[in-house]
Length: 303
Image (cartoon, rainbow, N blue to C red; front, side):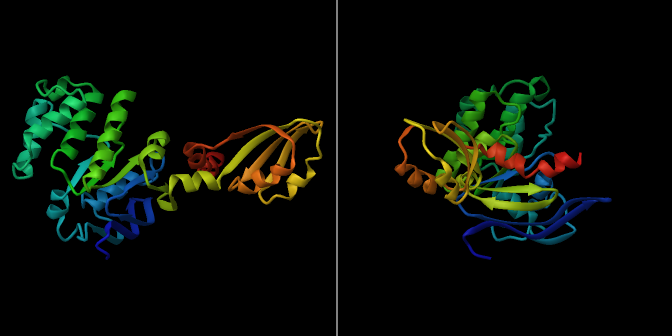
């Protein structure tokens, strides 16, 4: 395994009784990158993350985290990792500070408490209340702080902005970007496409326990269908545009405007339009969410 690879899975499988949660997951995340892991509930995101930390044992396949087999040395993997579970379980009678000091003790009391207070301040998290008196959003903040506070090499974050208001979501994304700038690798699952598109350098889409696509977000978007509406200064024959690879005419208006569907890059269409008296040009770029949903159209039809 290359030293440049932070985590890797090959042929990862896991079943819960008759339910096949993972059916051969292959992943490779480079050190220092922010990697988004996309999929709806039940697709296998959380199961994959738990296998990476040896919180559950896979039925088959290979796992390496920071070059270590988690089954052989789970303590070392967890020491070097910051983990935010999808459902953070904390002692309800502890205060926020008590819970964070407990996590610090588990990590050998090596955390800089000034950094903990800095994180809490940025997330508007009061350290004094008991956990049982916190809202869901504030419990999530506790989880974010405990994952980040020891400057781990690798962050495994399961829905890190779940339950947070938009301002706090943006602050968590800034913390993720700062962690990367300080050398950390970030692997995070999410169903909020806008945040994945904003920070992830690569994404994997998991569908029914199988990774169906790994790519840069911009690559996925550029590969998808666009729509373009062109208006002309005078009536024209738009038939030559149908000869441009990937272009389909959806509708046209007496030769003065045309609505096109474009598959892939727009470069060919733009070059072809140089021969036309164009007065206006509008395009609609698909969002990552639309692309993601396209992978699940089959599931929706089956349902």
